[in-house]
Figure (cartoon, rainbow, N blue to C red):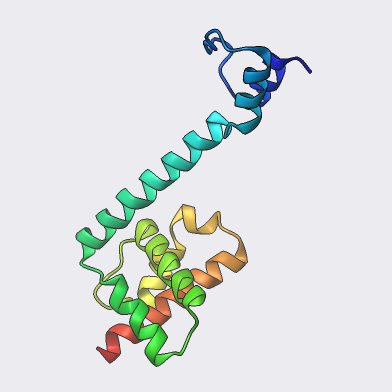
Length: 141
């Protein structure tokens, strides 16, 4: 492959201006580069996550930290499992805004959303479990 072909594989735009770098310097820059499109994807995903997390917390006054702590103290779950449950609860809230007391009726409403039904059976089950844990947390508070 030529230097420019390798640059395209790294997702540099075809009109990228390389300046007056030597062939060796170009090879090193391309070889050490994070693919441009990968960096763009990661940045967009982070921006979405940060914005969505703040919007969800503000919109519904959900204290995810307290839920996390409750899972740890009451259910004795590991940090990874707790993070997963909080993440799933945030996902549920995006699909179908959480109510003050998410009961079986809430789960039925969640299951009616087209986005929920596009998820795998396993993910749907995990989301339901997160809602049930959150309901137990609210009941205990």
